[in-house]
Image 1 (cartoon, rainbow, N blue to C red):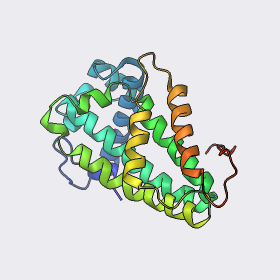
Image 2 (cartoon, rainbow, N blue to C red; image 1 turned 30 degrees about the horizontal axis):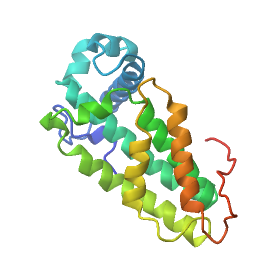
Image 3 (cartoon, rainbow, N blue to C red; image 1 turned 90 degrees about the horizontal axis):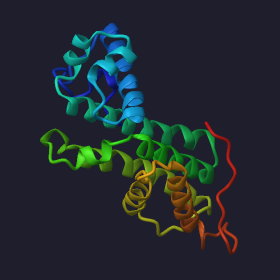
Length: 213
C-alpha cells in the first residue's frame, strides 16, 4: 500500500505525521490542483489552485515549494487510490467485473490528468522515483485482479500483469483532441483480448455491462 496523504514525501513534509487541520488543508489543495490541472493544464497559476482550495497561497507553498512537488504528490495520491480501489472491487464485484472496472479507473486517472504525463518525462529530477513507484504499486494490484479472474475462468492464465499495465497506460494516454472515450474504447478492446480463449469466453469476447462505482 502506498503512503497516505498525511505522510507524502513532498516539499517539507518528509514523512512527518501531520495534524488533522494540516491534513485537511493538504487534501483540499491536492483536490483543487487535480481539478485546476484537468481544466487548465499543469501550467495553471498557483493562485488559481489556492483559490479553488480555499487556502492562502502561503499555505500552498508551505506544502509544495515547487510545482513539481505538487505534481508528484498528485500522482502518488492517485496511484494509492487505484491500489485501494483494486482491493475494494475484489470484495464487492465478480472477478471479471472487478478487473474491467479497475481498468476503467486506471484509464480515468491517466486520461484526465492533463499534462502530467509529459511532465514526468521532462527530465526534472523530482520525478525520478515516480516510474518505479507507479509500477511497484500498480503491478501487484493488477496481479491480484488477474489472479482472481483467471481462477474464475474469466480470462486466460498467461497474462503478464506488468505488460498489461504498461499497455493500458500507453493506450490511456489522452488523444491530442482530449477524447477520453477513445482511450476507454481502446483499453476495452485490450481487456476483451485477455478474455478471449478463457474457459468462460465465447468465440468473440465482450466487455460485461457492469454498474459504475
